[in-house]
Length: 155
Image (cartoon, rainbow, N blue to C red; front, side, top):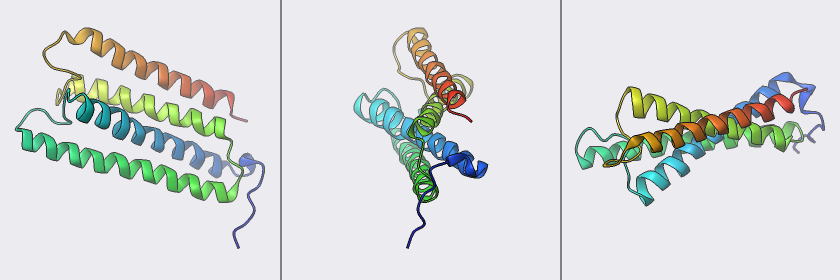
């Protein structure tokens, strides 16, 4: 028989850290799998994860990227499942961690992959300034919102 979750997630600081990590991982995975891969790679077909080679290499890179981001998503959910057996989950705090993960992933993607490594851009054949401002700006807003929620929900 599974133990009854305690009402206080702060009874163990390690549980709170795992809660935040699970939300962060889930947010990173959702940003990579749903936002970036499904929307920009598949639906809009604006870019692939790696655009510096052939179409076959680009599709292979998308598949590997998809596998990695889903692994991160599932990892976050398994952690959450374990936490739910230990404590009553403070969903506001977990949601803040998810937003932090989404914002972090998008910011990392926009700065490292788009600008520093230049392995792909948001879109080709257009002036990138507006796209970059929206991508990086929305990432910063999501990241800061998530961090604010985490800060306000700490004990």
